[in-house]
Length: 305
Image (cartoon, rainbow, N blue to C red; front, top):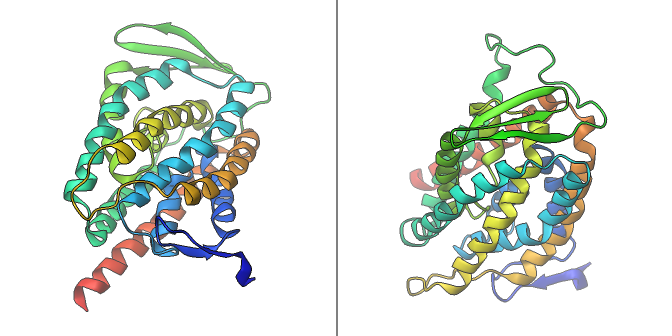
C-alpha cells in the first residue's frame, strides 16, 4: 500500500491517495442533507489527522467546495427544491463577510492554537442551536421533524423589501429579508475565517433562528456556499499575505477531497427526502460536539503542558 502514499508539495501533507476522497464522501453524504458543505467537518480532519494547520488549509477547503457542491445543487434543482430568493440574499450578505473573514484569518488568527479555539467555540454554538430543540422542556410542533412527502417542491409566493414568502409542499413559510441579510453577513465572516465558504453554515442558523424547514433550505444553502467559495478561493489565491504565511490552496489535495465530496453530495441530496429532520439534526449536532471537544481539549492540554 505504500505506493499509494503521496507527499503533497504545497501543503506538506503525506497520506494515502484514497484517504481524502473517502473522508470527503462520508462527511458530505451526511452534511449535504442539511445544507452544510462537507468542508464544515473536513477542516478538523485536515488539521487533526493530516496535520495541515497552515492558513492555506482554509483555501484548500474552499477548493473542495468548488468541486463537490455542484452535484448536490443539481440534485436539489432537479427535484424542484431550490429557493432562489434565499440563495441571492445569502450571497449578497456573505460575499462581504467572506472578504472580512479572510483578513481576520490571515492577520489575526494565523496561529493554529488560536484558530482551534475559534473553531471549537463556533462548533459548540452551532451544536447548541441544533440540539437545544430536543431538550425535554423544548416545544416542538407536531410533525415538524418528519419525513418529506414525495413530490414536495418549493415555490416563491411573494417578495417584498421586508419579507419573502414561499410554499413548501402544503405549508407556507416566510422570512425577514433584513434579518436574513444580517445573519448572512455574520455567517459570512465566520465562514471566511473558517475556510468553508460564506453560506456553508447558514442552514443551521436558518433552522434554529428563522424556523425554516431543513428540507427546504438545504439546496439554497449549498448553492450560496458554492458561489461565495469562488470569491473565497480568489481572495486566498490572489491577494498578498504577510511574509511567511502560506495562503494559496493545495489544488491537488482539494481536488481529491472534491472528487469524493461530489459523490457524497449527490447521494446525500438524493437520500435527504427519506430521512426525518430530527434524525439529521441530532446526528450533525453530536458530531459537532465531539469535534469541538477535541479541539478545545487539545488546546487546553498544550497550554497546561
